[in-house]
Length: 227
Image 1 (tube, rainbow, N blue to C red):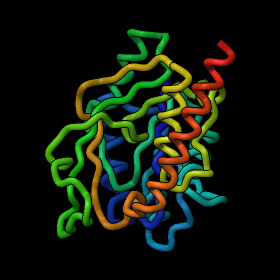
Image 2 (image 1 turned 135 degrees about the vertical axis):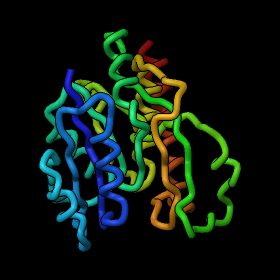
Image 3 (image 1 turned 90 degrees about the vertical axis):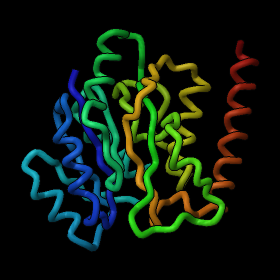
Image 4 (image 1 turned 90 degrees about the horizontal axis):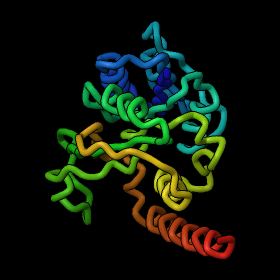
């Protein structure tokens, strides 16, 4: 089985090299690294193209979900992993998860734990629980994921109707469909907290989460009716 790694970026010149290097330094090497660039106006394209084994693809449409879906459409690996340009992986992330797929051919995706860290010089926004920076959490975020490419054909890709909540919507959907998975109780991802995180739009985030919950309830009712 081969792994395609998708890195989504927009104006990420400050962090992109660090993200790419955490992929290149993995104990298990992926087949390919694909950088999807959402019309950056900084040095992001130059940085991505400077790596010989990175495939650079400009995004033609808008939004985070569409960017990830562009990566999925262009990936050639049997398994797909994701990394945001401002985050980094632990060095054995891919090897830990590859072992899960080898040991259990029934699983369709794997995810693990995440640790948050605060960008130097940045203050937490009001309402952000500081205790989250001190806790290891279940990483229901694409940065901890590896997914069989065939699963996207079964349940669909990321939903572009959600600006912020496309990740949460996807994780909710795979849960509702009872897709077999593995959870690794180890930190796989270090997620950076800073002022450009999409989740800082608290009101939009709240609205989208409410829609996701309603859709999930309706989906489960439909499953019950169809028995």
